Each structure stands twice: as C-alpha cells, then as structure tokens.
Image (cartoon, rainbow, N blue to C red; front, side, top):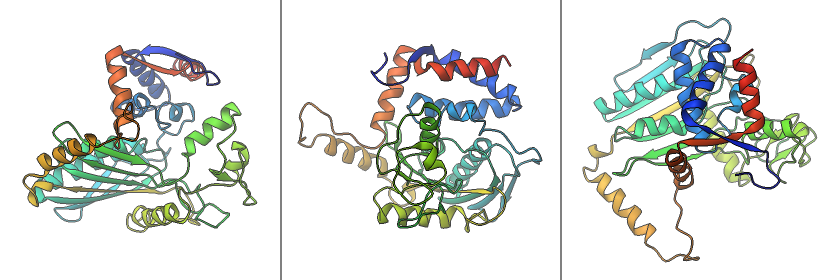
Amino acid sequence: MNTPGSPPLIEITVDDLRRLIIRCLRRLGLTEDESAIVCRVLLYAELRGKSQGILKILEKTVLPASDRTPLEIVALSDAMHRLEGNGNPGMVVMTAAADVTRSAALKSGLALTVTRGTSSSTGSIGFYASRIAEAGLIAMVLAGSPKVMAVNGAVEPSLGTNPIALAVPTSHGPVLLDMATSMTTWFALIDNARTGAPLPTGVAIDRFGTVTTDAHEAMQGALLPFAGAKGSGLAFMFELLTGPLAGAGIVGDQGDNRGNCLLAINPTVLAPDFVPRCDELLKRIRQQKRVDESQPIRLPGDASSSRVAQAEKRGTVRIRKDWHGELLNLASS
C-alpha cells in the first residue's frame, strides 16, 4: 500500500472520510450546507490524488472571511452574470457560479460568469468544469489565486498559479483537462514544507531569483511557470480574465480579492452531432499504434478517472496517515 520513501498511508472507507471531513468543517465554523458543498469538492480532489484535497482543511484555507455577508448573484444579461462572493467560502461561491453558468448556457446557448470577493480556496476547478459538462455543455473554468508565481524572467511573484479546467461532453462522461500554469501547485509546495522533502529541480526560485529545492526558501520566493515563456504567457492571459475582467485583485492591490471566470457553450447549437463526433475521435485516437504496445494511449483525465474507479471498486481511499491523525485531532478538538 505504501511506496518506499513516501509518507505512510492508511486505507479508509469513502463514507468514513466524508463524515470526518464534515466534522472538521463544522468544527471550523462552516454551516451544515457549506460543509456539504466543501466536502464534495475536497473529496473530488482527494479521490483523484490531487493536492487540492484535505490538506486545505489542515491549512484552514476553506474558511470564510470573518466579516462576510450573503452571496449576491448579479444578472448582467441573460447570458452574463457576476457573483459577489462577499467573503463566503470560495468553494461555495464557485459551486453557485457553476450552476448559474450551466443554467444560463442551457437557455442562451452561451454563458459567461465571473466571481470576485473571496479570500479562500476554490479547490479543484475540474469539479466545476465537470459539473457544467455533465449537462452536455463545453466548460472552461479559470481560477485566480494568491500571487505566488513569477512571470518568466522575473524574480518577484505577480501571478497566481492560474489553473485552467476544460471539460467536453461525450457519451461516456466529460473529457477533462485540469492543470495549473505553474510547474507545481502551491499546496504541493506547502506539503513539501511540512515534511521537509526537497522540491523537484526547476519548479521554484528563492527571493534572490536562484532556483531552489528548499520549499521554505521557495515560499519566500516564487513558483515558476511551466514551459518557460509559453506557460508564463498563458498564466498572464488567465490573470487578465480572472483579475481585471472579474473586477478582482491584481498584484500590488491591498487585501485578498480573488476572481474566477467560467464559460459554458452548448455545442449542439453549432453541431447537433457534436457528441457522436467526439466519441468517434476518442475511439480513433485510442486505436492508434502505440510506441509501447503494453501501455494504453492516455488522454486528459484518464489517470484521475482510473483512480476514482479503483476507489469506487474498493469502497475505500488511501490517505496520508499523518493527515488522518490531524483530521481526527481537529474533529475532536
């Protein structure tokens, strides 16, 4: 069950983990409804082996602002909406935004939603893209985040890790690409800082601009974009769409005002046979000759879907033993 050199794991039923997460979220002060929403997002990530899972509880990045006010949904047109987060949990705001975007796109064929006014984590944005795509829509979700990544060639952090999630409907469920524009995620960096494990070479720099494998030095410096100038360019463009377009914060602003951008398209308006054609494309690609015939061709989301299928078959999920202990302590504190 444990890989040599990796932190010890334990196996726990998905239901037990769900109940434990809810207890922890309630201890942290979230309401019953908020806890249910945040739990779904965190479990989505945890079952897929992503760094956007239960570590966020331990780092307490799921909490609402102390001065929050009710979430507001502002209809700018039939197809365009803005959600005023007003300090509510990021995952709650983004779930509402996904539902607004999905509903508007089903009516109008196209919908764009932005959010602003949150200061807590949105979690794994693939959750929201999938939520939209399950209604037969193409979804794109962009997430703004704290400024922890440097533009290519710079020393100081000025961008978020700025992930993108793209989901396309097929008859077998959405095909999903969910990736950050940074070489690694901020929460992977936090985990390395907690354990003292070295970072991979080339993912971060210290405050002097020197590449470092020390997570603590990296937290005083900046993460690096993937693929140099290409990743940096994508991250910068996403920053424009989650910052200025959403009316959210940019580098140098006071306070923590995170923005997000969600787009949904009804493909059947343009192409009534869209889903069958996507199915055919997937089939043809998977049937192509492989470099290694013992290994399948892997498309976006395949690895995550495989992990979820294995967890569902077992009825259990494997999590870090130290994290499980911390969750138990928090739940009983």
